[in-house]
Length: 319
Image (cartoon, rainbow, N blue to C red; front, side, top):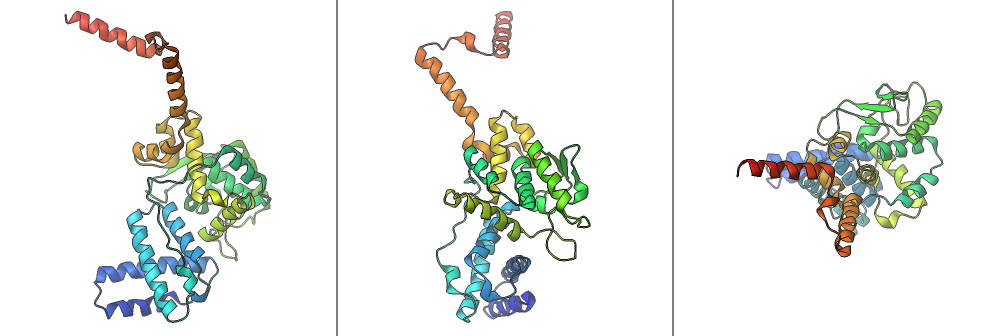
């Protein structure tokens, strides 16, 4: 599959329709990105493209932090490209069965239930896959960040991974490894090909990272094994689960923000707000006092009482 020739043929058709240069550039960029991913996944013919390939491309763009409007444009360009080749009798019409709907950023994947996390981990019988999934689950790294991680970026004794340039916003940061993630990584380090530069590498003699499509397929294989496909879990769910679990365990938003690599605190707040158990607990605790008729002020925290006392003194001083 020669992506340059195939893309140029479609661009030529668009040029004959007097499309603007900006539109043509957007179309060409979308096609190239898509075909590169397809090639990385081992497919060399347009006839082999499936709807799953399109969905994988969308997931990858979302994980990279691409804006929803840009993803929609790229999706429209790719579908236009594939429709052209469907009319030529090359791409299967099944690619267009059911419309692909994009979720807005506010509708983030919900976290996995604790029982589902345990089910997922219990069916992983491959050393490399267990290490990859546990690191995603315990560090909150984006899949692209993990696939770009080199052996020189990992410090197992110190239980940390250094990310020199985040995929989404170019912010470097450090993430930390739990005991089970360290154990899984150590097992993989002993089995992996030692000369490979990347922690999770692709096939072949050249040192290159595992492709996104391969990593996604491996994660979804275990999701399917556990019978959890109907819950809508994706690779990105692992990152969301990480954020939610730490938030519910009492981690401050400011710390979580740095671990996730977010520029602003609002992004972190939005990311974890769907399943924040701390608000639920605070609500029922307060409501229980109200229902008992026991909502006296002495239940306030010491620092709150001190603040009220200080305010009272200030008022008295100023008459």
